Length: 392
Image (cartoon, rainbow, N blue to C red):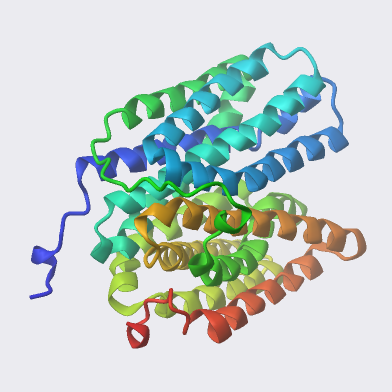
């Protein structure tokens, strides 16, 4: 028999706890994302300094992830997650006492390393906790913690900053990761495999995860650009605030993962990757050509659907065939592509805006979407890591 009643449990105590830990990690991240530029300005910095701090955070995160992946595989998920959470708790207190811009930017760079450490360890550990037969559904549910944080934490951070200034803001994000640290110590599922592999450059990335990672890289180039620039675009076109757009994205992501989570395990990733890419392209077209509230909100729903469908599908594809002692490297490979896609998309968008308007820039972002679809169609769907039925 292969019905739901005979399937292993997904919502165990360990799964609930690791999801909550991930939520608090991204509360720390998302609450500071829109507020840290104001802190740099408060210290006397300019737009160049804000850009430098943002870039260094991303670069530190991207560069450190491969090493973090090796540490997760060789030192254990719990140990590395605790180290990351301790760092994410201490760094905001450093912001509170930093007396100058140079120290604040340095701390922000180190924060990027600890964020990569925490998020990588959590995303690896959850694949040990989820039953293998429910990996797609489980990763979809786990990813909801990030979606909820995206909808709530930026508004929370801005509200605290505007009402009470920076010290209470830094205290709240530090408390969030301190709570995550306490929850981590209560996760009982520690039956993961520890590797004794030496540190080698060739071992820092997982080849089996590359097709999913490259597909995700092109997708995140477009998705990340919309996240970064939609608030400015909405303001220029007299549309509702970017916060409303993000809330609709988050709601659509949540609904998509609840409704379609099991489809990944039953039918494979292709049934969600193809319509997910089509949805983000339709969302971009609506954003550009329908300068009205219904079109604007429908665009957000389409983007939420696309992220809710594609991200867990490709993450499952990246992880499910990898041996347990290589899951840290697999998670690192996937999230390096995730982060690098956002960074590359943001860079290209900045260059395009210098010569074109926002409408033209957004339309150019349909090209990475097409590249994502084409790469998956040619290389991904038939790769050994794919779990489409014809490949099983």
